[in-house]
Length: 95
Image (cartoon, rainbow, N blue to C red):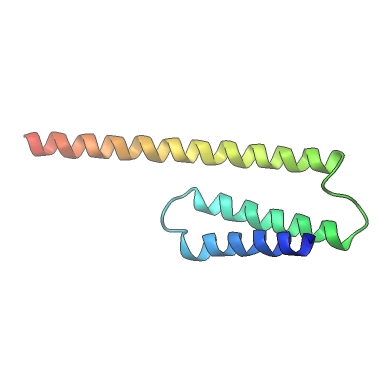
């Protein structure tokens, strides 16, 4: 069953990177994270080490938290830039 999850994470990461990269700067770290997650699950299936419990699970949670923080920063900076651009365009139309 772990092979299906690994394939799903890898497919989602590659799909995001190839097709949707131009939509937002947030797509690149998300796609890299999904590919890392796919590799993590694949290594978990091929080795006897359980990477989803114990210390390795906390490492994965830490990586997830960092990626979430990076994506949140990118999202809010893009949202602020979009709002500033829209306000500047409306100010230019009023003049």
